[in-house]
Amino acid sequence: DTGVSQDPRHKITKRGQNVTFRCDPISEHNRLYWYRQTLGQGPEFLTYFQNEAQLEKSRLLSDRFSAERPKGSFSTLEIQRTEQGDSAMYLCASSLGQTDTQYFGPGTRLTVL
Amino acid sequence: DQQVKQNSPSLSVQEGRISILNCDYTNSMFDYFLWYKKYPAEGPTFLISISSIKDKNEDGRFTVFLNKSAKHLSLHIVPSQPGDSAVYFCAASPKTSYDKVIFGPGTSLSVIP
Image (spheres, rainbow over the protein chains, first blue to last red):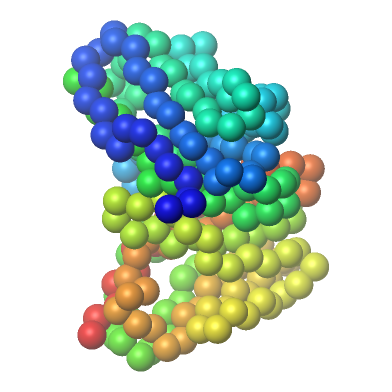
């Protein structure tokens, strides 16, 4: 399967714990995006990378959130000191370039108890 | 403040008939519009797009219409098939940042056999 993959698919954690999600984009794609989706809403843009450079961050991305793409391949999204409001589906997408179609992974569903 | 609106949370259509999904936007800087389809437990998949220089784009059973003066677009599916049952997201991006795709809340389409 050469699509976008995300790990884990589900994560249940207690409030205050740290969590980390991984995204593996389609191999030749330079751009990688993170979105968050809550119930009844569409995906909301969080941040994106061009290779290893993080080019833009949404105001939704508080100081507790950090994303990396160290070698321009896979990316991680870490949430520190999780809160119940962080419960959502976290989606990753990748594309060849700025104007190319974004291909989404299946998402990581986070539940904060 | 939602910049992309889909005012119908759900829609039911008989198999073989036309499905019309509507979308309104508020930001006049939006230059590129997309429709994504999402099945349960999967990420959104790209369906069809349209640039602001066009008013219609067709791909098989799917046609997107854009009315810039009304800031309105619609997706027509003809004929509708049971496999089309999914959540459909309207999305848009501004020419200043094609990467920053803004999604609507989605419309859940049910095609009844």
